Length: 504
Image (cartoon, rainbow, N blue to C red):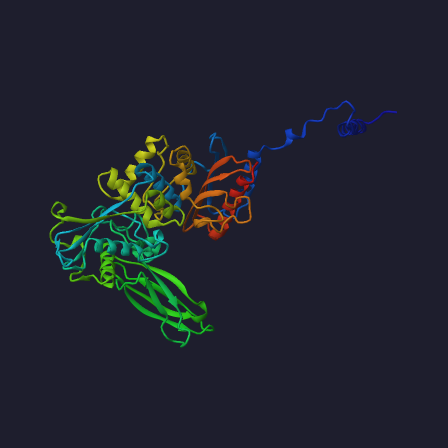
């Protein structure tokens, strides 16, 4: 009987299938590990899967992950593309300031006079503060006490026997240029603490904290507003009233541009309780000497003259003709950069950039500071061809960096003798700074040293982590132009950090 061709083919196919699914006694199975991904491949696969399914189709991600000790790169996505870094920019500023100025660098501010102190403790002349750019005259450096630094100044004057000043309190901010804002900053940020003006003479980070407390007795009464530091410098209008908990409310605050006229207005619901808001001041130099005069008088030291911005003097100050009373030294640079990176403090970052210009460039300006930074990075072999720095803090949307360049910065600092100072300045996940509430309950908790970055439609996280076996890893994760809520983007960043932290 003739067997059809089709039947013969099916018979042959069935034999092949049976032979492929049986295990003859002399077959040698391939070892299981040959089918498994390495730890790096598995981590890369997880990151890819996470980003491929991220709800950020309208934006884009840039990621680079690299072993710190060997330099081996095991994950990249758009690593060479340019991104707005937001406050990741602060790492570029603080790294350069730390390496160029040194961890023990201290600002030195001279208090001088054009007069003499008589036997009765009367200074017959002006008290002049020669600003050095010191950014540490802030509650942040003095256990949240707004007046500590002023008390130190007053004690130093008393040690010199001064009990009265027959003259003005003059502030000289000429260590820096007169540009009070960063390159490309938005005008509508000027009222808020993160957009405070930059000056060579700075006190309380150039803003005033206001504690708002509703009137718990009488509805319709003004909310109690208490300034910190206590000062009359800002002309504050209080049109903010206490209303009942069932009232629809809307309240706001602002400062008129170029002035010190500010206001709170609207309805403040009683159930909101106490809250804190900040308003920046105009002219930090005048603010500093104004508050100093207030504190001198509070301490019983009479001042007959006025607070004066040195730029308003008819004649320039000739320090060769003046007499030094004392010099006040700042906290060390190692402490200052921590106060920048951990809370992501913009003003101090801007001051550091201008300081580098003053110390190593032609003037105390951001432009000169950026030049110094770029020359420094170039001298250490970083590829700066596509690095675009425009301010010191990252508030400007004109800054452009890549994950490649940011990891190069992290690599440079990993190999630098000041590595420990730099790394200690970065927030620690689940414990300090801007990531103190992030990654809690994961392998990444208290295992990631990284700098955040946030402005509109921008979120970054770059730094260091360690695998379960203790291997250090450097990473940079940047997201731009997304339209989903920022917390969702941060959640994805945290998941990536955890993927790296749980590696073997």
